[in-house]
Image (cartoon, rainbow, N blue to C red; front, side, top):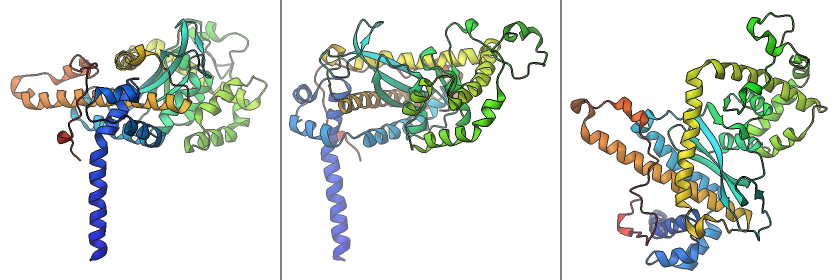
Length: 391
């Protein structure tokens, strides 16, 4: 009996401690995600202590805890009925967003297009508008090696099958990687008419496509793929199991030349599925529309992120890589929370209006976006009311 009493007492104490920490955790996430900083945030919220925010930032905002929290919010978005009108969570897109960066930082990189030192936050968003993964990268790095990280290492329940990127996320090796990992890669490639397409059999008559492939070097060497097939299977299995980070492995793979047998086998396999994608992309209007729609959802999310990251005039001043990861993860968590709140309110209004009785066409919901923030007050003092917190 005494042990049972002590166990219940400990559980109650843990619950009370969690309840007491929630306002501090929320303030810390906003301080990091909005680029405000712990000291300024402690003056913007009544009853919040700077040292407590700093302690939570240093000891509680680990990479694992932030990914777990984001997964909870993303799963909650997917469970709302209204989000089924936007997507079933089977497709996703990814793109990078650049923020100005302090010049006195060790990892500083200069962006010619941004015309300033910058840091890039690479974000993944599902077709139901849920941002499910993000991490910081140098703005001079190409996005292609990082495309697999969000799909393999997110902790959500999204059944992702197809992924969209722009030209920066495309390589022939990525086509091979997605195929062997059981997913479809659908990039929007700039200058598609200049891309090469390939054939497997030289003797097969492909009719109208003959002028496009009737050149030296436009034939796939199947023997190269067969020779390295087992190694390719082991390589991508290790990526999925997490024995090595996908971005690290793909960066090394993309750096090899055609003299490396394993690299050229991956390249040849990727060219097969690249050719298939190009031909389908040019002939299938629905695929082009689906790809464009997926990438536009990421652009809408970036517009919201730009307004949320208003502290220090949007300039990233953190010098440590871990602090940059915390800022990126907290920003994504705030984005997901806003999307969840907006989708939940849309769902509540639909249930109250009785669409069938009032003749409302729910098919039009596919053209409504939850990424709106006119009703979100970004600036001023924040109020964290403990009485409204429910566990």
